[in-house]
Image 1 (cartoon, rainbow, N blue to C red):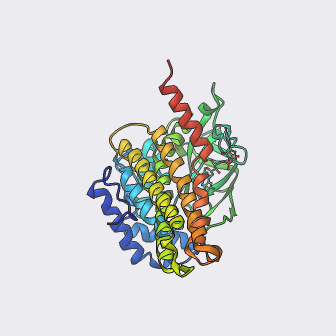
Image 2: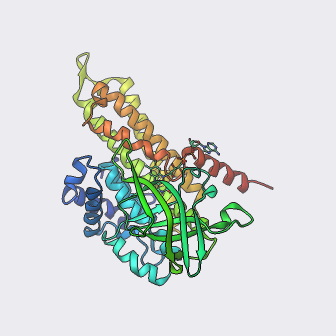
Image 3: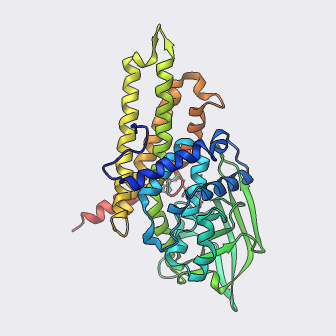
Length: 387
Ligand SMILES: Cc1cc2nc3c(=O)[nH]c(=O)nc-3n(C[C@H](O)[C@H](O)[C@H](O)COP(=O)(O)OP(=O)(O)OC[C@H]3O[C@@H](n4cnc5c(N)ncnc54)[C@H](O)[C@@H]3O)c2cc1C
């Protein structure tokens, strides 16, 4: 065990750390071809999910035995280990969790039985469809409508930036079913199978491989049983899902940062300028110290948030936002320094740090931007200290 691996043993038990070994066995074995290339095709993404499922790595992400059964520290350790290897693989892993968690929380027995075992085995791909063109940070502004017509729900609207669009077998999709006193009260959650007539997918291409796109819903008719949980409770389910998965984004960021540090340490030892290894210059050493310290600080916040959740605290809104905010911002700085210390080669396609530079960018945006995390943290701090 080195400090390049998830070692915050202060918060981790052997049962959590074992997932790091399991991930490494997959990366060196069945996953080797997936982490070696940047193949963003949908069929490759599906093959990754299948392979992760066969290796048993999706099981900690899917709460088949009820939402309380998830160990967030196990998910974090897995995400850190896979983020070290490939952000595409990490994305395919976590979407099986984020795209199914609300079903574990509120789905009917038939919804859960139909989908959760297949999601956990990597035989069905899940997605979480919340964001809309006019409702990003302000998710309560969403406009996609679900109208009751007889014994059906009819959905119309547009979702954007939905991971696994075009790949997923079903979408957990949030739509407006009423107005309510407050905007978020009129939002409900639906289980939308990918083969529903009226659903059109428009793919989007990002700077690093990531299956993503828009969903255009034109009068998509669903049976009454497609409602997940109670009508008007969708916003709570969305927030509960994000609450649990936000610290795990921080864990993925730690994996990317650890990889950047790993690549940098090799490089500064091998590269000589002015007749000396770069690692012998104190200015370079100061960068290494900052990278290593920020990585450890990020881990402490991530694994603390996860441990608090695993300890039974119902919501970890403040802890999770702090972990996501700090870890993703730190990872961005660490990767940027890695590129800088690699010199001009750091910008060349095919270099690991060049890939990390593109991969790390999304983490400061998805599941709530850094600005939004600050709003959440400040709101929580103000509330906790009022009166
Ligand atoms: C790789 C990737 C994967 C994604 N996957 C999914 C997915 O699977 N499902 C899904 O539903 N969504 C997904 N998203 C969407 C993501 O959640 C949104 O992009 C994100 O919430 C921000 O919304 P927006 O892009 O509309 O930006 P906006 O909300 O328009 O924000 C633009 C800028 O304004 C800032 N801003 C906004 N409001 C405030 C404020 N009150 N105070 C200060 N600053 C503010 C933001 O911080 C940001 O810098 C994904 C996005 C990415 C990049």
